[in-house]
Image 1 (cartoon, helix red, strand yellow):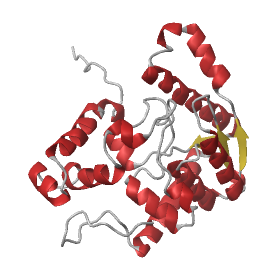
Image 2 (cartoon, one colour):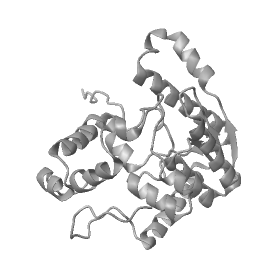
Image 3 (cartoon, rainbow, N blue to C red):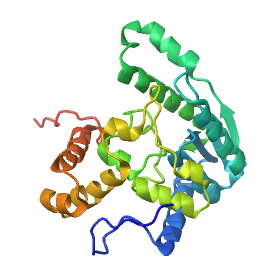
Image 4 (cartoon, rainbow, N blue to C red):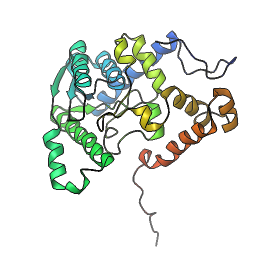
Length: 276
């Protein structure tokens, strides 16, 4: 992993965690997974494997928490997924020695497209169908096996709404949901995840050629820094701009992502109760 990059020159503020803090996060997350499974009275956990760093880290910590025999991985390719990512997903399952199934979602997705062909050419709508199909399969397997569904979302994605509503956030918990993307990479490297997976360009693969950073218009290190200093932290826009050396437009972009996705982080609204 690259060297630590301070968010503020000459200041101790940084997103990177020390070795001691990484060990504490590892223990904290594995204890959390154990507690979720125990509280649910479940027999284990189901997790969708994409070949990306988020699902790889989550699956690795789940195995530490529950044991390989209690984690079931699902690799769910579609016609827009790269062979490399699907190969990486299987490689992770084999490395962790967990049971896994490869479930081709194309026939299911095609059934949706045939039912409503008017939406097929809408790239976002069609991509969301793929993500939501995987969520249904995650729960189908989890229900059948008395398991919980582990989400793979991180803090950066949750805050900016970079997920599909009732799709990849249709889960029972998000074990790494307290970590910014940079910290996800750092913890994964710390616990021995292969370097090529740690450094891989993130992609939700909702459509062919998609990458997270291109769609958001920001690299994750910049996004994380703005979130930590300005959205989560006390820095003003001007102080954040000066500290990070980024234009105000980058700050505005992050704030817009957070504000426009607020509905994704809330229960569906209902009218207030009328009292007679």
